[in-house]
Length: 409
Image 1 (cartoon, rainbow, N blue to C red):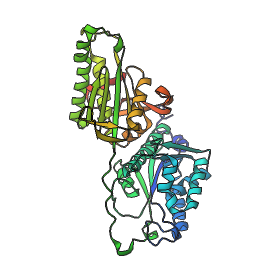
Image 2: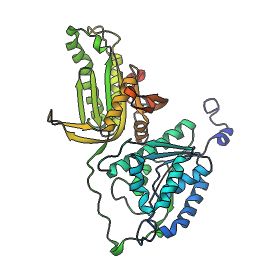
Image 3: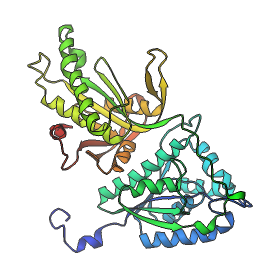
């Protein structure tokens, strides 16, 4: 109906409620005299959140499961049979110890009940527990939850909105309710604020909280690629391959870098390409540009087989920026890098597959150069698990000739 009768009044009745991202402060433990939300104000907090949720009428909710507002939202949605996506940054025991147990064991039991509910859909940004559990883990999982709400809204033709349970204080670092609210406001989408400034109490003396320490790990977007049929090349064809195909990878990195910032890491070996970018949009721009250039190459004229084609897998996550002791150069390590490497082998030649985490990060960028289209759950290479994957193609109205060439992506 949206295609043949986009102004039909029935669409207003058929359209589902908003896809809702929620974020909010954790609740202080029983007996605490200071905190963003005091334990004795739980009833008031719950009442305010329920009123806001009833007014919004979401068809799905997306967020984490920290004590306080996160658990309250998840309980409300699950009681009403609403699709509930729970995004966790790392292994459950460590998450509960960090973000739920400080408020008391009752909150742990409530969180576990939400996780056991058959309507819950639980997603982990990382399967294990990092050594440092820095704020970047929580900031990254919040961005994924936000992007997931936007992607869900796009798939079901709904609106995307955020419910922010916030005391009005400015962000103090990259993670937390205030930081999540600031990220969402940059999207220009609707935001509903539940004011809880009167439900907390500052610490004695009212001294501002110290800034969080600099993270030892960083959020980055990763591109892995290799060339189908490279192993069939003859020895004499290798110089032409390096000049033609790897030369195209170099030019694509230069073009994407000029538009959106240079890659923070770029390497090749054989037919492999490994690139790291600060933002998902820049990584997507590089991938689309490279596929577009590959589509235009006259491989036969270069003395190469015409069926050479590159496949690209993209992922976004938190990783270690470390100096490689073998090469002496900077490099990136971690589960996020391994996940991208496992996506690339299952990508069809001439295509670009991205993880849902990458698609979610991309959805938060107002000038995203690409459109992710949901493919489904796909088994990764080497038994690495099943991932929700998206196929990447140029966004409608993409500005450059290079991206227009990427229609085969």
